[in-house]
Length: 459
Picture 1 (cartoon, rainbow, N blue to C red):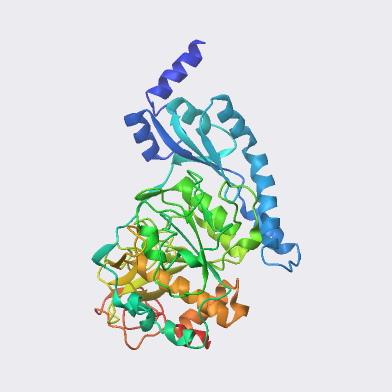
Picture 2: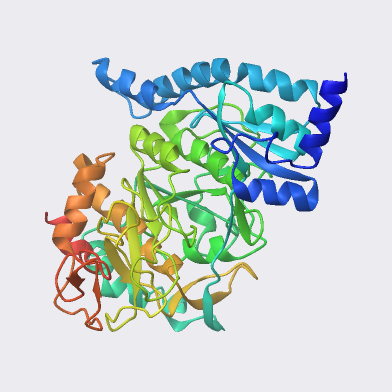
């Protein structure tokens, strides 16, 4: 008993000499526990889910229906993670704490874990790391004006759509019909005049934290990035990965699972055949080189979902692009203005760690007209890479309708986008990042160039 008492004293005092293995616990978590006494923590299990994807890939199994492959992977992942998480779940259940488990990555998020519990977790043989739950603040969109715009009244394409030549594909009846787009953000005002008729309906909405029954957006960030009509006849679905003005890791992981294999609003009835064709993400950290979302990205690839991310608004310094927009396996998007000048706020590459070409694409992201959440007929002109990436998300939808063989083929979609990208009209600032000047393509400012869906549709 005396030995146990002295151990608990050491735990509560956060005694470095006795308490926590440095290789398992993060310094930021220790600091939070010292200041607050508890913390929301992420437990990363030693058993890696990558082996499941490898087994399915090497199995030689052929799946005839879209979603069958992901259904098989999901079932295998659920069995695998359930078994490897069993001991930790038992420990948590015994202490009556709130937690969430995930199958797309072998991770458990625990709410308000105290120092004693963190000590037990950090020394558990099944655990490779215990750290604070990641919470990502949303970068605000810069607002120019609130209007019911003539472009909307006359049902004309907005300027950004014209610049990337979306309207020229519309003239060929390539409007996104038959394609499902998606986004992870603060939600969507589903009753907005330009959104309500295209909502997917069943399997089209998920709110991991509150399980609300229909699309909603108390912040406005999601409603604004969703609604300017790049692919006007596509159906949309959405997941509330950012409950307020920030995005918690648990919600983002829950949304990652939903996009890979959609469920009903209460989280039941998983049906992987309902997965969207493309997912847009206008969120991300200001820090690069972070791998915590990589398992989700792998899951999306397995489900045949093309991931698009904004590069971030961290400014013009080289290497400012954040994660997950800088990760391999996603299309990272920078912002240009309506004259094809790179936006001053648009984050630059190269990607931290691997030096890859991030961002990879550019699209209009300054004074872009879009819906807002204040009312069903309200619009804003907004600026940010969060407004640029939806052009690419919608562009992918148009390309897949034009060429159905692109469906689920990330490499082929990237090739089409990159080979069709416009470079001749772009105006840089003679900036050199990663040894590449911004007038040499690809580079770490514009990427491969600005989106041109007509040129890409011919590749």
